[in-house]
Length: 220
Length: 264
Image (cartoon, rainbow over all chains, first blue to last red; front, side, top):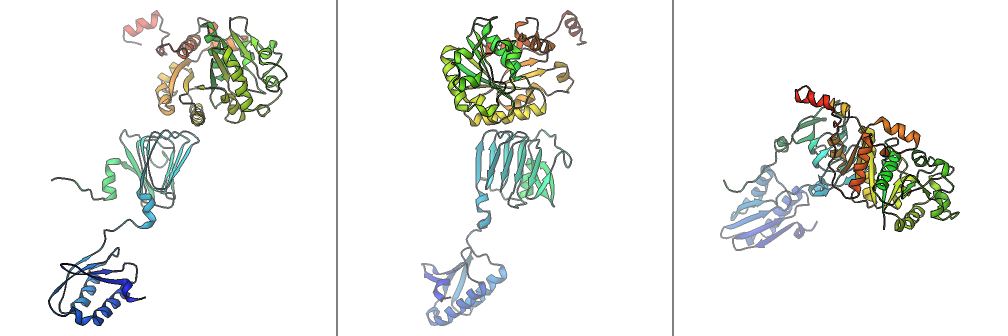
């Protein structure tokens, strides 16, 4: 690989920005960095230069960051100010699932809805009606039919409903038939999820704890 | 121009033909010009329930295949001013007529009638497609059983796909005693699942069986509770606001006293 494509050095007002390629091997990157510094060693002599390292999409452990800093420290006048990665994106496989699609209407007996991603249905699923969805399924209404969430094997998918009275639920490749395996007669909203490979039901208010998602609130 | 209403259910034996016969008759009693069409080819029953079986000369297939004019095939019910029946053929089957042919026949009848009641066969195949072809409004008949409600739901889905914006629901053969004891589906539960407008509740009534065997629609019997229900449905079709009658209305003096004493 040619050197210039994986490390780009730009001068800014505050100092130098090292833009490191995020696709290549990390060891290759370190070698290239050493080579580059050796080659242009004399240019980096003189007064202290502040260095800002941008890693792109690459995520580094503290250990690897230290290795990176060690190389730069060899040049006496380079002072690493920051090592930054782009905020982590959802991995590309999950990308279509990140979108929540909203749908309105009643899914009646004999009707099937298939969707790639997360689905919000405003309406009921009647007995004999089916939703198949690669992501989560949220039913703002009565779920009396069957739902298959995480059709492509996503065991993290959940099924939530205002009224949970399904004929059958499936998440990934787990099939469960209420009321043999679990019964729900609760008047509150519930969701189904896989807990160690078994279908479980919990109050919808428990979903936040289950997901461990950080919520940002405005104000204090 | 008349309005064509198809009476359908999906499941068999829930009372499509009885409902067709009684609604047609009730509308005729209320002074409307009514034509009933039996599309259950091969298993025709509407003529039997109406007591007009022995007067059939031509049938729906004869009209479709051009062996007669539609007016020749219509049987006039002499008990009423303006009630006609277009019977189905008994020797052919559902595939011997196409939805387009039915649509043409219904269209040709519309200028002469106020209401055209189309009796649909059970199932969702060709017979069903034939029956709904000419109609612009649908009445779904169901009974308080899970199987019937499932099939009704399926049919509502198919109708919505075929541009029937708001089918109406008739719940047939309700037995108030069983509903009260929790052994029969409740009207509210059925309506919640099907989510369409309820246009009538017909109580289970032995006089209906008697009536269909004698070829006199129940609705002609003023003492029958089912008759009152059918008349009310007919009035609702005409646009009147008739409150849904309470099922346990059969309160004689005795039960009123019991109720008063807190025993009922």
